[in-house]
Amino acid sequence: MVFKKMLSAFGVGGPSVDTVLANPNTRPGLTLDGQVNLLGGDAPANIEQVTVGLVTRVEIEGGDTEYAGIMEFQRMAVSGPLQLAPKQQLAIPFQLAVPWETPITDVYGQRLHGMTMGLRTELAIARAVDKSDLDQVNIHPLPVHERILEAFQRLGFRFKHADLERGHIRGTQQTLPFYQEIEFFAAPQYAQSATEVELTFVTSPHGIEVILECDKRGGFLSPGHDAFGRYSVSHADADRVDWAQVVDGWLRETTSRYGGLRAAGHGHHGRGHGMGGMVAGAALGVAGGMVAGELIEDAFEGDFGGDFE
Image (cartoon, rainbow, N blue to C red; front, side, top):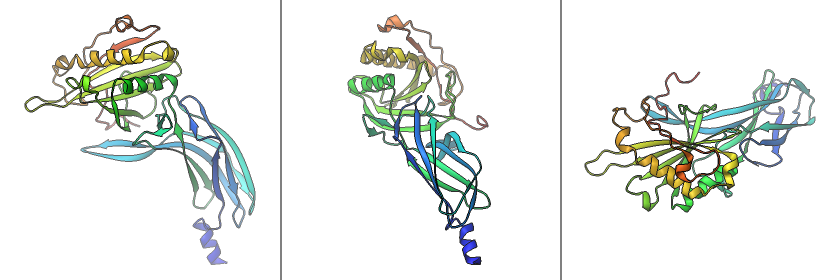
């Protein structure tokens, strides 16, 4: 009997948890629906709380090193305290809101290389080992995301990698503690001005802020440069504009300013502000309330010490 009690303390013969999602595919701003299935163990168990949370892999810079950590960025209790009798089965339905800023993991049904996303279920058991369950989740783009990603493809950009960086992009409405960078190899026609382009979306119920970082690798005697551009787009614009033309305009405007960007002498990821002006949407042949490019030098705050609670 003592042996059995000891096993129970290590979670053997204790309650188990299995979460089933109605559909693992969703989009930012929608929900994930499912149910948590509990099964009682060999003895009655006092469950303190059942929670579900969205978790993902985030790159975290610490000093001179960068490492990856698993971060939970949305959490909800699906049940308060309850008692589970031996072998009792209990199903608890839930509907978890997917934050607008949730990073995109899948485009056209293909997983973006470098992205992970899961729903973690936790069963907190009084005086015992907590139980958990992890289910893969696929976050698909909203229409305006899809049109912009499509435009990069139409312009000849090739997808390289996507990851999440811990930190905040200054001057945006970002609320999550990380942002997504979708990296592309630049198309041949931009080879003079960019080797790679990183794309970040900061999404809200109204629209998205698009942040571009164009990376120009230095030649034999010339140093490399980064240039940043920021653009605001409404969800309603998804089907109103020629996105290839708009994105081409963004890229040309962003890369045209390399010269002035380094004038202030800030290192990469410094805290300087670029002096980019505002350009009227009409200049890019854009219909609807689209604001083109406040250019920001070093929009990404890279030295994260003390930036987080």
